[in-house]
Amino acid sequence: MSDDQPIISVKNLRVLVTGGTRGIGHSIARAFSESGAVVMLTGRNGETAAAAAATLAGQAHGFALDVASEDSVLALAADIYSRHGGIDVLINNAGINPHYARIEATSTPSWSEIIRTNLDGVFYCCKHLSKSMREDRKGSVINISSVGGKVGLKRQVPYCASKGGVEQITRALAVDWADEGIRVNGISYGFIETDLTAASIKHPHIGPRLLARTPMGRFGRLDEVSGAAIFLASNAASYITGHTIMVDGGWTAG
Image 1 (cartoon, rainbow, N blue to C red):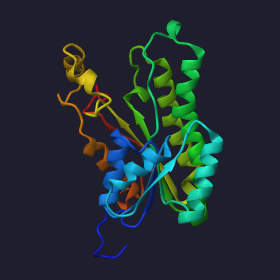
Image 2: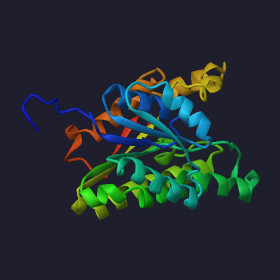
Image 3: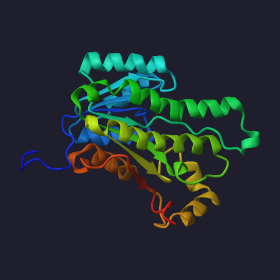
Image 4: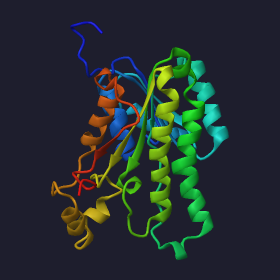
């Protein structure tokens, strides 16, 4: 790195963000775009992904992807390799949490849907979208988890199981790929202000309870998650692998 190049720089990096059409994923995609990266974001609907990419500055492209389908991931990998020669940074953000129930009321299809998307999706993407990074012997993978990967959350057994698995993929893959120059880290977030969490945050009972559980006494901002992603993708984190940054206001510190 030259003396005049900032250590926290992602300029010209080819960055793929799964689930990048809204919320945390779109905020991460926007941060990389504004920092000079070439951004590729995905959504289940190709037109929605293209529209989301069109709102970003610089070079941004939208692709259709169902992370729960290995065939869909393989098709995307071939398309990106053909168009862009691959990627330098993979951010596995796509995930769901549609089910809140005790385990005795959790159906097998509900369990399977969450595990397929949140855990199998990370497996498929790491396996099939890493070709160019392994060829170049450099790159960064960032797996997005949540506090549910560290601690138990009420009525969220499938979600917590999937995110715990994501954190173990992060550690194991970091060990496997360390000698290939590929760093694998994670970001685990607490309650961030998004359209998806608005109902819980504004609820007269749930909101105050969540705040009381958070030592910093406030909800997180989108830029506080995307800032961690920029750091992990940059040379500032060049000796960090197998680690998950907790962007949770101290939720898991106590």
